[in-house]
Length: 159
Image 1 (cartoon, rainbow, N blue to C red):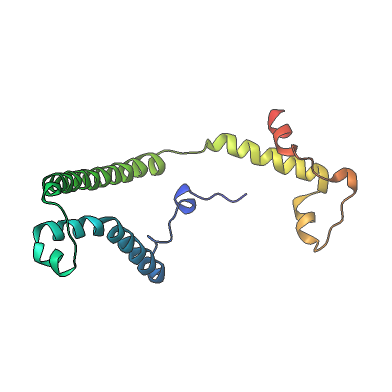
Image 2 (image 1 turned 60 degrees about the vertical axis):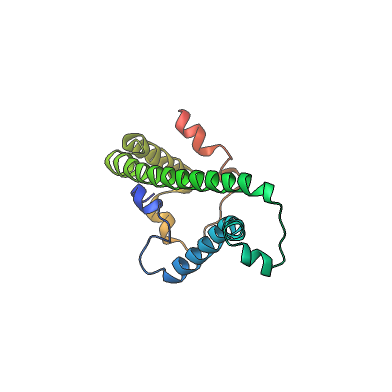
């Protein structure tokens, strides 16, 4: 097993350099998605505040609905702003937490990992021979009794 840091394992292609096709595609999809969420509210807002557009589009509504609709629009605008602020706060908090926990502290107990690697290597050596000998062969046939069991590693770790 080769040692790799957690930051090598936890990468998003969107944030790595050079993936501009992916960035453009995912950004366009996100913008289209947000437009799909926001467009009904914009449509209702335009119709209520510009009645001449509603008349040209042959949209008829009762005047009793204007007050509740204005309330709903204002309510959803406030909720949307709260969601954006919460999202930004949680993103910043998560990034700081990630930088503190995952880069400053070891996620995996290195001593335990090294013991497990040694146990696995010893088990492989018992079953299949020395590491250098295994690496020299292009083709190696094992006897049926040499096959690994499903719980091979777990039994080694329990010992």
